[in-house]
Image (cartoon, rainbow, N blue to C red; front, side, top):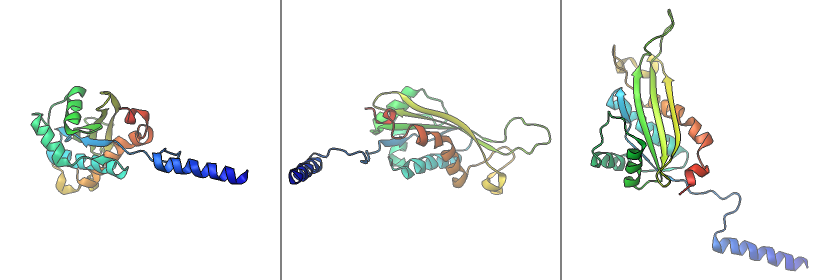
Length: 198
């Protein structure tokens, strides 16, 4: 009886190996991601480029397959898109589908600099105001949207990057901004049905 039981268990395990039946601990493949070049408004193109790199780094560190920046840039240009114009989700979806990705990340660097107003006698620190939307290109629906004002110090930015009216985001600050705006995504949306729905 015991021998028969062992044989049955062995047969089941063999079937799992042959047919690839996923067990509870099996990891599912992550969706492919394409990141639209970060659009920028009250910010510099260098800051926007660094933000795009920071966002790519965040997804790559979580095991996602991120399409190359050259592919994203070529797709952006082929669609005749403007780096300083807001677009509807339908445009971002078209971009993602044309690139052949499962998910499209649409970042916008709205402003980099000192807040417009603050309490008297307070020392204001510059902010990187960033809006990110993530859409599933298969379902056509948005799965994430978050805007943050990531505060950083003049020391972090480096005195050589700031003028009276303009701040640039060096790569370390851009990375921290990307981590800030995407932190909720990786805790609540990653590996969810919203991501995996085709």
